[in-house]
Length: 361
Image (cartoon, rainbow, N blue to C red):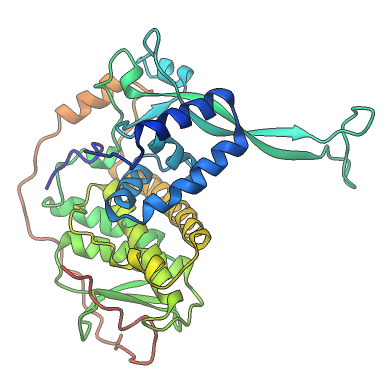
């Protein structure tokens, strides 16, 4: 398994040279309506499987940014792996080099509502009324710093791979702790890897699938338990398809972030947006949902796993973080701890989520 999970190869969205120049001109002139329109038109490119995967790869790296900012970064600098403000790079002892080229993102810019006399207006509680606007601000990719090879790593990515059973158990318990529904490893009849049952708020995961598939399935079903709690969707209908698309996409992003192999994800549901005549606005809405949900899960996992690993973060020193990485030794493979099987959880055929088909390999 490739453990260099912060590296994204060959991320090249379908932007020809004229589009790139057009985007540069729009950003330079700060033409906000034109930029919004540019991003709107570009959404069609994400219906292509490779381009969509690239977007998800970016979300896994830039999980603190909105869906709109992820697409904006990807359009300007598709090979970047990390961005930060000028001052943030300086704090991390890796300042931006002279003449460094900026990448622009949207940042909140609250504007005070004023009356005809230019005095701030207040609401019934006496609070100043503000409207949230957004402006373009510069950030810088690692390639624009004095030492682009120095990048921060997730603490829990420092162990080499999932062949260390201790790491698998920690990730399993981390996911279990953030799940709103209890998770059981059990023998599921049929081809399903797992399911979320809304009727009693439980998640079942097929036992014996191996470390990676177990974790990926857990993330998939946890996403269902958060986003689709009251769903009555049936297999084959548009709502079911959209929900599967969202859950699978979130699973990909979070798995990528955790360093789990994602090479065999196929995103078969992606074609449904054109085959079933879905509106592009609905697709864009799902991208926002996917991004936000992945961000939420990653943030919760980061907090949980940092406590589990009980490692102290260096004070924004790339050198210290890299030294920590160098000093880690590989752990020999051992058998994962067996999880007790619960035989009381039987598959109920009438539940819409139980018979979710297994992902095609």
